[in-house]
Image (cartoon, rainbow, N blue to C red; front, side, top):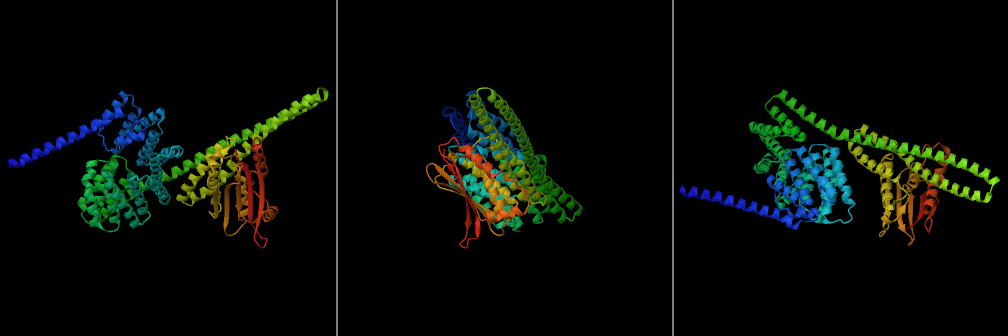
Length: 640
């Protein structure tokens, strides 16, 4: 007995000593950072990668960083606080700390710290099902990352995190196929940089998507891949998440004993970690497997524990699951009224959550872009007014100068008149370009909105969200283009890609649109007037392809033909110009493009200051029998 007491005493003292040693080592590492002071936020993250901070250690790091005026240390500590409060589901406190970190990151100009904090803010809002706000933060982070000139490994990892987070938002909107596209893209980056933690997260997300698509085998395969990566990383929370997900699939497959083994193994670990969100998930799953195996009292105990956590911390998905499990429990006890009530509560939560995420989200996007279009239309009308006033001024000047020139020094006055006339005409031309450029927006946008609105009316939510995303990018590009005289060819091609995607909706996506770019061409260095290619693509669609049956194709290619010129070819397999002219002559055509003649004038005006000038040529394509097979327009553009 004495020997046993002595052994226990020794064990406690040894454990205390070991813990004390570890804490002293942590404190030493924290203090040493102020000697090293990494100048890059990612380097600071790597320095602390093996430390799990207690709340006291976070507080010490923040206070010491403030004393030492070490800004990156302050940002890191505030982000640690943000995660600490997020894991305790104290979301308001978490957001406050993350926003303090974001403000400081912007103040010191740390791109790395800013994108990390933006992504973390997106995660917090996503946990609260505030989808629109979460999406804004993740998109902002992704936009900054893609513009980074030095694409380091850490930048790529952060990019993959942003893409993964946007995929998670699609999961919340039940757009599982769109989510899978993002996760596969994120995995491609993570495999390239060997980011095992990111791979674990992505395979977990892919498993969740396939589970909801009804493919349990692929879901289980991805969950087990995620578990393998989490075991390699010694990630305890990741292990809890994977075991819970695997158990959920096994229950759905009727493998209750195997499901029980997976979930009961991580119960102590989940309780030790204390993450309320995942603890509620584990209690729900354990309660469910007890209900399935007719251990109803135990099942009720754990489901109600999950319910209490979800209710207290405002977690709709866990609350809905708890109501569903309680409904199943009531059925087994033949408590039919209670079963119906709990089932109805689960349905109400799901409906409310999905409506909030989907309908409000989609409606807000439509309203946002209708407002932008209205604003741009007003700007267009203002420019037209300027043109009218300028024309009036020009005519008045012409009359005055003509009368004076007849009476006084005609040659001198004619020169002055000529100069003024040229200046006025140049201003008019510029205003006409801007006005017509803006005029495209309401004409095209309202047609596009009508097409997208059909998806919403027909309850095709996946297509509605997908095309609204495309539409929002196109509108932003058009609005930006209306304010500049030139854009890079890279930006122009991106805008045309979006334009064709939206136009293609009205053709039920029958048009195959292909872009081919010569290798070695630096599209960022080639300048063109904004939206200069749109009229040619519009002609291909509405004159070449709209009346054609069968396969429809438009190919846009860019090639370098000399050191001074590139050539842009737009080729369609439509009915040809001759047949299109006959059709146009026989009916009233409601569509009116921006105008090829005006486009030529814009190109001419754009290249006037260059050594070389543009050229434009049409080719009528025919087969061996002389029948029309399409049209190709070739535009030679000088390289600045």
